[in-house]
Amino acid sequence: MSGPSTCTTERHPVKQTFTEAVHAVSPLNGAIDGSKRPEPKAARSRQPRQKHAVAASYGCPECDFVTTDESESRRHLYALVTGRSECEVARSRPQSRIPKSVSLGTAIDAYLRTLENADTARVYGTTLRLLAEWFDPETAADQIPRGRLAAWFRERWDESAPATWNRNATALRSFFTYCRDRGWCDSPASALVRTSHRAVAPPRVPNPEDIERLLSASHVDLRERALWRLLFDSAAKPGEALRLNAEELNLTGRCAPVRTGVISWGADTNRLLVALLDGRYSGPVFLTERRAKAARASRDIDPASGRGRISYRRALEIFEKATADEDGGPWTLHQLRDTALAVAARDGADMPTLAALSRCVTADAVERYAYA
Image (cartoon, rainbow, N blue to C red; front, side, top):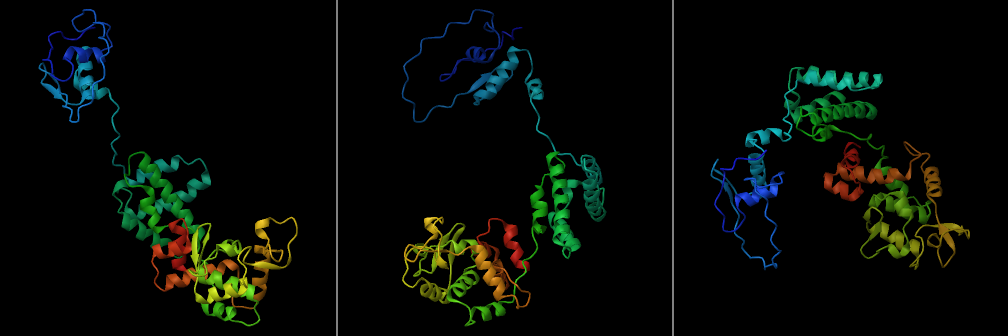
C-alpha cells in the first residue's frame, strides 16, 4: 500500500522535505511515488553547531498540519503513508487510565473478595464496614475527606491497645492502596491514614525526680553515675554510650559522635566524665574492674591499665539491682533515654526538636514520646 501522492510540501530552508521525512518513517521500501529511494549522500564534515539554532517546522498543505515537533510530524506522516487518519492513530495508542467513581460499599466488597485468608477477611471486613457505616456506603471512595477520616479513626480507637490500633490502621491502609491502584481513589493511602497511625505504645518512663535522686546518691559508684547521667542528659542509646572511646569525647564542646549522629550533654555530666577518665586520652570510657581477657579486641581494651570495656549485660545488671526498690522498678537503661525524651516533649519540644534529640529515623518512633 502506498500513501496519497498528491500530498507535497515546500522545502523548508533548514530541515528536510516532506518526501524525505516520509522516507525516514515509512515502512515501505519505495518512496511515495513508487520510485526507487535515492542512495544516501556521503556524510558531510561536521560543522560547528550554531549557538542559536533555527527551530525546524513541518507542514502538510493537504490537511494544514504544521508542527515544530519532529516526533509528532513522524506520526502524522506515517499515518498518511499507511492510509490511516491521525485520529485512528491516536485511538490505537494506549490511553491513560481515568479514575472511575466507585461507591465505598462497592469498593469494600471488591477488596474483601481478594483476601484469601478467611480470618484476615473477617477482621478487615469489620473495620471497613464500620468505615462504610460512618461515611455512608454510597459515598464515592475518592470523596472521603482526609481530615474526617483521621478524626474518625482517633475518636474510635484512641483508647485502644496498640495491637488493636495497628490492626485497624493496617486494614485501612491496605484498602485505600487497593482503591488507588485501580483508579478509584487518587489520594495516597499513607496520606489518608498516617496522620492517625500510632506505631508502638508510649514508653513506660519513671518519675524524673526519682531518677535525679538516684543520680545524686552517694553510694553509687563514679562509673555508674557518669553512665546513668550521660544517658539521662543526652538521651543517648545505652549501646552507643557504652561504645564511646576517650579519644572520641569533645569535653570542651561537651559532645561526641555516635552511630546515629551526635550526642551532647550538660556541665554536670561533663564533670563526671572528666573525673572518670582521670587523664586518659584513649581506650573505652566505661571500663570493667578487672583486666580484660586476651581474646578481647584491641579497641575494647584500655592500653594503659589493660582493663576491658564493660558489657551492656553487666551494666544492665548493676542498674536493675540499684533500681529494684524504686517505684515501677527495676528499671532498664533504655528508660533513662525514654524519660529524657518524654520530659523534653512535656516541656514543649516540637517534633523536629525531638527528632534531632532522639536521632530516630521515622516520625512514628518520635511521636510515641509525645504520648508518654
